[in-house]
Length: 363
Image (cartoon, rainbow, N blue to C red; front, side, top):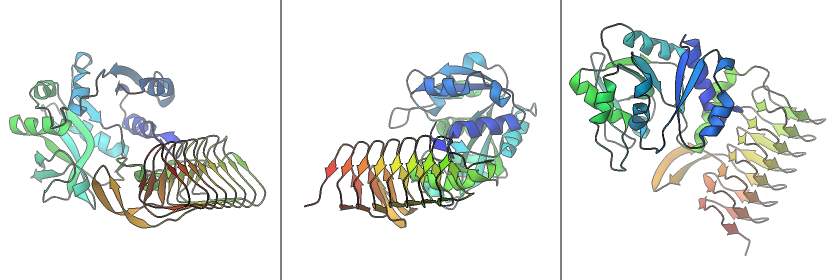
């Protein structure tokens, strides 16, 4: 439900499935499932029928697929809930599993940095092996694109799947079992692909989906303000006098960009406030956060550390957590990550990682 151009990621996925001619969807829900079910309802708005199945404990992607077994009696598709893909690959995978040959299939795509994802080795159009998880040593440019085609035999493979080191049952491990038992077709995909593994992924994925957005600029725009046609402004958002909302930016519901403020290539979540004269570049500003008057978040490329993993060459000004307050005149260096409910005092210069609930003061 993370918003991309002010629409949930899952909405783009549902649209791709519908455009491929699929009419019946099962959405496996768990954490905060009410938000999903309230937004999508029975699917009628998207021309599909949606049924919901609850995964009571989040025990991995294979475990999630296992929850639909009582509702499936024919070949079916599985899509990851955090990857935006074109309808073409949904159709291509569907064609394989609908061939009547008992085939299993998995979409694969090429990316610049395959080590960040689950790598896939292929041979003559078939999957040879899937490496579960990023950071693995694997000589391939192909990765798992997050679209699968299965027959009901997959449920036996899931039951035989061993848990990972974290105790979860993962779909790539199940695919490796299918490879050994009956084979899995590798379906190439060359269209636009992006997932949201880290919050800064919202920046390039926003660029990706803007071409799908019609009439993106709404809200209240004061005299002298400039809002790029390559940006998205929610109907209840507001932009003050002489402010600038640059290209590839999103301003969410009830968010405010103050007079003479500038945001560029950034995502401002609902209820956030960018106060007068602030400059925000290459950044994610969380829901309810405040960027104080004349504060500066500098854009740029940096190395960002998340849970002990270093991510090099990340284009990121800062991630500012929900309900965090950045004081007036403060400066956030490129690559700064500030947790939820933190406070950065007036005039402070910060970099690196600031934990949730922490307070930083001058002196």
